[in-house]
Image 1 (cartoon, rainbow, N blue to C red):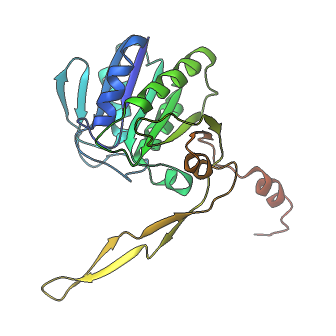
Image 2 (image 1 turned 90 degrees about the horizontal axis):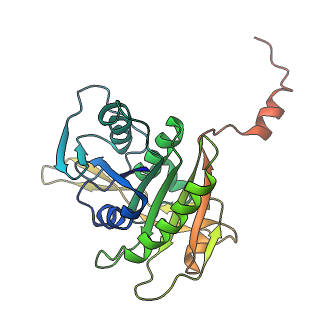
Image 3 (image 1 turned 135 degrees about the vertical axis):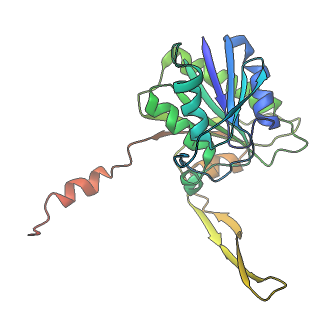
Length: 249
């Protein structure tokens, strides 16, 4: 079995390295990740310059691009003369990827790209990890990965997994969830530089809506959240409604 690991925190991120160690029992592990942090890069591709890779030995490669670039280079470049990976895991991310944030997430985008290519894929995030302790999360990922390998996933569907940081405690279970809603206050912060020019930080304090059945609610209760997501974003209800439009052009 060939497992491809990637992330958006970069090749040297503790979450990625911990996961790689815990996945060794699955077979061959290949790590292909950005050479630096690419958080909030979403599903962007680099099309205006060539991409370069750096090899670190032991099936580890860094790509000077986005997480999606890393997946593309891994599957269609480094592995082009071999078969596709049997499983793709993006993470373990340093911080949450829940609710509306999945639209911005490079971690989630890498799993989307894997799903598009036809690889069963998972995006995994740990909320507020302290002292880089990703071991409990990596153990859970390994268990979920075994289920995915046995049962498979529908093409163009993937799993978005979020876990609370628990320290030396135990997770309170696993909950299958839907995406919740994130609310951002003061999203753009305006400041003035020493030369009197305005500049802006995209920042603010995020809040979330506590609705039962969502990823936010599960994680706030100490549970592992698994949200099954689809690449196809078609709104089928609105699709049917729009068929009845009486517009003339």
